[in-house]
Image (tube, rainbow, N blue to C red; front, side):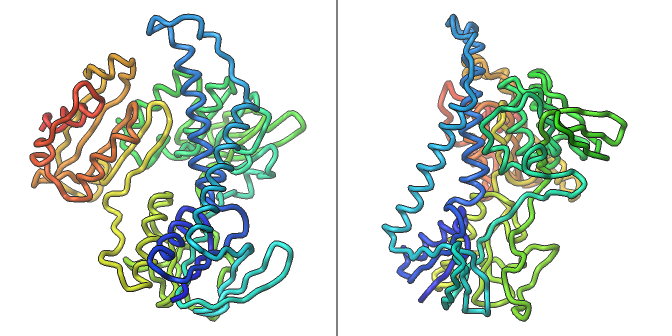
Length: 450
């Protein structure tokens, strides 16, 4: 069986490796570099950046631990960028190496679906080649939403793609959108002494998270000098040789050297298939079943092109399930009730399952158990006392959601992700031993709170 995949991001390349492993003849079509937005202009670059400023912050506060002479540590922006580029290149080469070792055919160019089994590939040099496949997986990812009135030009008004490629640090930056990208890049640049303002239309930054969780992060960001404007829209943007002027809906005027637009992403599916190919969509996203199959039975879609959380680990899981279904080996379809969401700020934010806000909206009866890191020995020892663990259970004491804000939240959430995925209750979770001293004891204590 021949499986063809359009797109080499975290959904596409993982699908290709799974198909090859299961013995299928596999072709992957990629117009640029492997890794997609996650590797090239998203997850990995931002984490490389944030680790640098985490170290900078630790150095500046080293006297707390009796270590002196580090408080005057100075960052060199171009060296930080250079390190990020080296990491991205290393991982890109690693994916290409896996394709070669797995004997996956790699075709460079832009793929377009001619019919349910044929793909036309226009290479970067203008040549066109057609291939046929028994099953096709659409994994073309997404691009930033860039409303025209915000004046995007890729230079003064930029998306996350451009700002992760700049080599000269801006002295000031307005960020429109207080989601994950806005918060992460906002803190990164602020810690490098760029003056940062975040503007969020919703009543709070990280609009999908509970208010008590967001308050912990917001306090820290404001303490570090970020200006945060919530519940306000952008009315007008003006540019000149000196920078950008941003007019907010309450009359506030912000002036900065650069403006970052991070208000969301849209699927990269425009012109992807012929008009007579009836692939069903809903609000621009491809409709799929639990096995990622579209309305055309042998065509699958995964990742940011479909109606699921726009997260790399979601795309990878969807890719595996699509391949297994195409090859007849799938045992279970995709489930989204236990998808971890992570924000790599300081403090980190991580959530799985339902939030309190969602429980209230759905009219569910629930209880919460909560424990603050400020009362935990390990957190006090390492001076990371901001935040808490919050666990949500239903009437049957089953864990249906959890939020963590604090040090290593994005690592600790895996324990509670497993609990939500397997439908464990708090009594089952409480049977386990939790190492002492450790930050994971906050999970144990939150369980005891019930």
